[in-house]
Image (cartoon, rainbow, N blue to C red; front, side):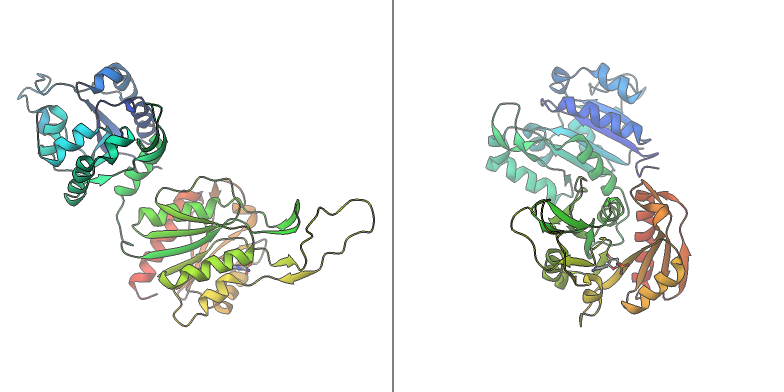
Length: 397
Ligand code: C5P
């Protein structure tokens, strides 16, 4: 189930060409089980018709401050009364300027002043408008007032220019909103993670690797961000998008992963090794492709460092979490890792239960015993793991 199920969102659409992307955002919100009420400014209506938003949200759209659908004509107050958040996407330079100064000259700006729910804005404008000191001042003022600012992104703009100011993609705004509405038990904590496989080259086109989609690690990084942590993710080669709010450091080999982790671990409160690190690497990497003809090549291997064990044995080690993916005897192997690597928590699963798929069934092992989590999507399992970790941190690990 999505984090936004059952939430009520008021979506403000102001007059920017990115208004067309707001339609996709409504679709994502509805699909996630949220209730959506759309409020459009006069200029917003010039870009996309209210009919589109009405059809997608299943609710009639609000455009006028004077609307007798509310008997008392108080739509500016009532619309956000039951809302969990007011999100303005796209938010033009003009609406940001109005909000920063407390102006209320139409329904949307009046709603903002009269709201008692959080406000999020996704700015969308030409790069010069975004870079203008007046806009930057207004955005700073809004941030200081507690408004969450999503994006903007950099890239190609509708005006043909390239730069910062483009509205974030609907899926990113969705993820930012979902994260925003979650409790933040890990606010102020820093989490360093590894995920994905490592790849150990033999020659320029061949290598040794482990099977790992990276899905569990990426779901966990997302859950940590939602819980308020600052997340650095050292990732082996995977084909997954970076979760919203995660700082990703791409590496290929175990040695690179080890180096990146050691470089950042000093700042971490929690370290989670999810990566399927290759245990061995070729001693010599051929500079040229090894030819099929000729003598059968012998590949000499040497051991890779154990990243998690090295982190856990640091003098000021963070809270350490390991993963144990086993094909049998999960209990004894997972407990063995907890003790041998001196970890605070091990997440165990049978490989046949989790590998590559979108669901997983895990058991959590800590100093107090074992705690099975129900089979669920990797996203839900990740939330369960983070919830358990929050409890352990609260009790001093
Ligand atoms: O490979 P093994 O079963 O020992 O992995 C257990 C845990 O140790 C996993 O969390 C994995 O990410 C971590 N690990 C590591 N470096 C290695 C091997 C494993 O960080 N070289």
